[in-house]
Image 1: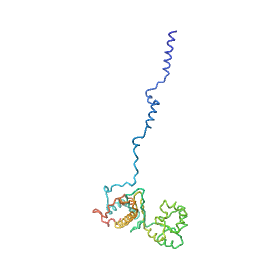
Image 2: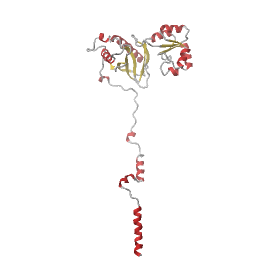
Image 3: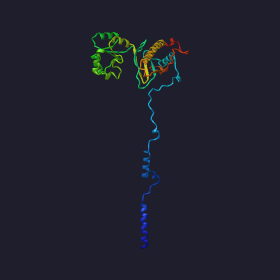
Image 4: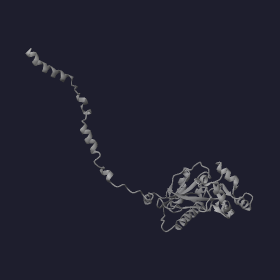
Length: 299
């Protein structure tokens, strides 16, 4: 009995150790003590990282301009020759030569915008709308000058219904209050068709304005670049030269009329077309390797 009483505590210890769960070695890394978790979470909240301590870069105030001295530039005749190679098989009036004038200017500066009548018109199918009393001498003179749509109430109702069947819109000064009351600015404004005195589309002499607009072109600076169509694919190099000169003279004149606090300089002039890439112009008409101009006058 004495030996049995001595073995009883030993037996209870063996049974307790057998019931104790044993964690396999493969699962041991998954059991992380709680104090390790607290230390890891507290370490991430000690302070900002070194890269976060660096100050953020200030946003650019000007557009990115590349050094054109490293770019290949072309004379006008050479650029026209390469552009025509991209436009093979196109109708002479379907594709247009386009000018891109890149400016060195501030991003939030005043944008250059104007209308120009080129020596050789590019867009001859411009639809011009004139808002004025329909049965007046003003309407008759507008139609004679080349306007395709003349009237007031009928045109306003058509615009409200979403039928905008014109490319440019002029308004006589006597009808300005009527279109403002109709709220056409919400419809025509986003399309750039709302007449205003600032853009010169609210006029007294409607006939003269229509005459200037027929065959004319508009250009506007967007993201530091002024774009405008300067010729049709069938234009000769001499016609293109006169149109480009008139366009560049107009842009320089608009820049010179800006305030002295607004700085704008021409950085690069690029010629492209509807289906061709852009070619940076050197300012020369012909180069020693340019083809004869008569070869570029026939498609």
